[in-house]
Length: 315
Image 1: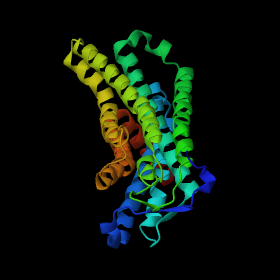
Image 2: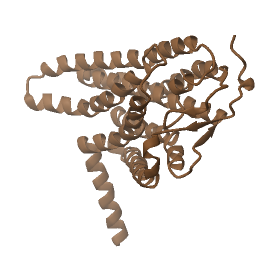
Image 3: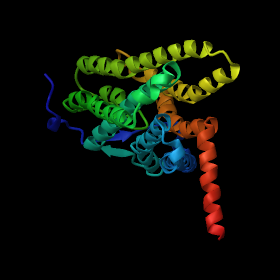
């Protein structure tokens, strides 16, 4: 029988991270801080550019701006604490703080899965049903879809958090990870965690595998539709509107599938920490780079706004 949460003997956890790299803490702090600032500034630029330019007020760019907004908070859940831990000798986090970090990290991650699925559906409608696109994908529907993505995303991890909060933690309090997460927390529990592992597997499979399946189905249909376009210019234009999104999808889902869709608590600690760096640090900074470099409209709009401000300041 599981003991209640308030009877756990552990009041805080120690985030071990990469022990062999602790001596390089100040240097890693500078690198991570630079990456974090670039991530925040890049996503803020994309979000602001889309919101301020009326020419970008379309469903596709609206979803891109929401993704940038989401990435800002997604990184804010883990990276600031990681930055602090690179400088302090005691890398601790309270029990409640650990659960909150885990909840918000997974809530925002699940919301991103659903948002990427919605973006794939948007591209499917635009390419496969262009005559009906504007009548189906209205501004009202886009707002409702985004609201639904966040609502479901923030509901999904509640069961996992409740289950893990009731586990007794009476042994080691050292989390072999760079931030609080379900797999390393389960490995520290002093009781059988098979129910938790099964619940995690079912919930994560529903979030990750189902959304990824819908995205792939959308793109398979898009590919068939694109090949039916007679002109090569039309095919290139159609593919160009999808390649950025598909790149982001593959980067994001490849890591989280290997990390969270499994029926065991035995795993490579080093392997999981490397994956965590990729999907929590590197992927968020690549998103604004991918969208800004590959999306001509965003690049042109940003240059136009920049030139306009320089012109106004020179007066």
